[in-house]
Length: 143
Image 1 (cartoon, rainbow, N blue to C red):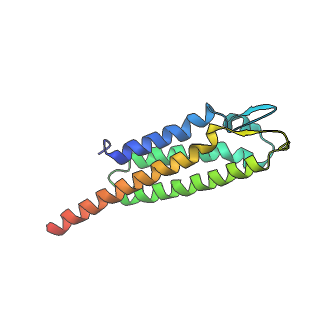
Image 2: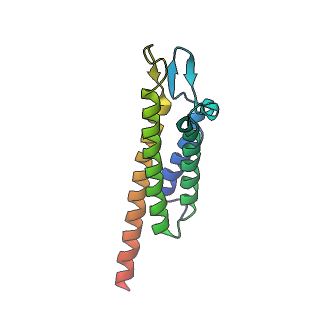
Image 3: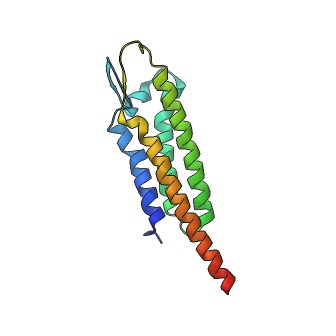
């Protein structure tokens, strides 16, 4: 059952959360681009939690892929992952709005939109998991 569409959605979400934020910048300032791996040495707690949240989202997505036998737990992990990404999105928005030297021109990078894309993929995966669960329940009623 690994070949189901929700597994593909979860795999794409884990790739986006695990690899792409380290390749694309979160925002650009006059000092240069800020990547997720630059935040490991960040000054504030919020800056240090961003990579942890990206890795947590990756791990939850990968674990959910292999829980295809337990669809209810897979669904719960998908919802938990959505909540993590909503929190991550809030942290990224807060950090981008409170950049030091914001009077200078700064641009938001493509990495700021990754949590939105991940949330979309997780919602699609949860919808497919729910559809599979409903199908199994309807077949059980016929027995």
